[in-house]
Length: 241
Image: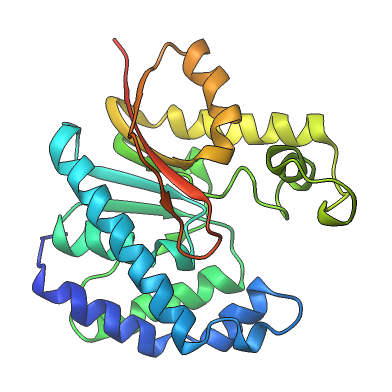
């Protein structure tokens, strides 16, 4: 996709106007979802996304020397601004993988509406990581390994939640095994010098893999809060011989 920074603001505005925010809110919350994405929340998500996208762009341009491809795993509403920034401002190739669900289909519908105006857009696909070929110099897996629906027991463990605050579901050993396999599958797609975007809560799953596979890791000194969940997002520079 050729870079066209002038199209970034147009694409973001069109996408925000097009998306069914009431639907997306209901998918986020079991109660009160229609009002979850209020106008103020949409603006807050945009502002958080712009902060993340700005820092992400600096990391990608400054220290990553790979094929110019990014692999987003589990990307959804919170990733919209970074996705548009990479595609339209930096002109990078994006592969976005998520489950075939209502949220992914709604976001793809929004992408298609933007593309109908003449701006090329990526799409979310749901064939799984095994179907993805080639190498990537940026992997994005943010608030995925600690997701309360996909990994409920691991979610409780990583956040230190118990009692009424815990999901009380799942088997921890099974969640850890599944989350480790997913993280390992992403690492296997990365080039020998790459950027990994993840959260501090998910690092207990990543660290054993870094050691086992002999990745050298240089984390960014500061973290940024993610747009929807509010987890501390951390950029990690990875390299191995």
